[in-house]
Image (cartoon, rainbow, N blue to C red; front, top):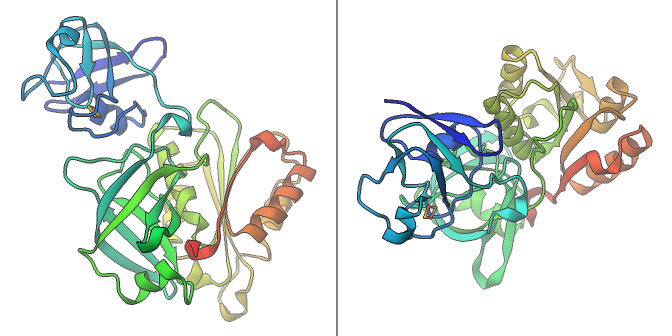
Length: 337
Ligand code: FES
């Protein structure tokens, strides 16, 4: 039987199915409630039941005692609604509200999506999940205290596996390992989530989302999150790459655009000579954005890619009327090395 849960003080509500926790259902609905362990031991997800009743299928979890339970407190990662609910809990809207964790993860599989790009899928231990906002990144922890940063390319509602896009950087400590030695089953350690690059949901302005190379990864996470939420704000997605083979998931944004009238997709190649059949846009991706949208004063812009792209675009976009506080970006060296 399905029950409806409303969050006090907001117009957010979602359905919770049989044998589903409040947190799992909220994530499925694209809402981010605070959580960490998702196993009833840390207490991060604790909130209040204002109206209604809950049950714990395996008895009271360790992070809540009988007194708190009787006072209407609940652990939403374990609680199953026994009726419709009105709950009091702070939704996560800022990256800083999520405490980064250090976790192990197993490489589940590796996809060769381009000659120099691998798509890694990581699986966390069974009782662990990573709370994050679409677009944030994590640091892979290496021997000797070194770390390498990679954006999360999956959306929070789709968190069974974490997805990273890794570009080959010859000689790069981690990327070299990914391309020459890393096998499914390998164990990695990481810290995350990190960073302030995430979708601002309190705006109704149209968005431009621009990725350069593997900077498409966090753009993918943000767009998938927005579509899952049912956001209808126009989203113009740009993907800048050297050649056609570097648009390693080109069919995906094409599918978004085909299915959602709010999404436009423009791939842009900077070195298309090798792609004789290419009839799309060419040049620098940020210049294509300005060709299409010479006045950016009414937009929110999200961009992720290598520093030269970010620096050139930052200056050009603010000169085109984009207020600096509506420009969100993630600047990284390819491969993070
Ligand atoms: S998330 Fe840790 S107790 Fe619920």
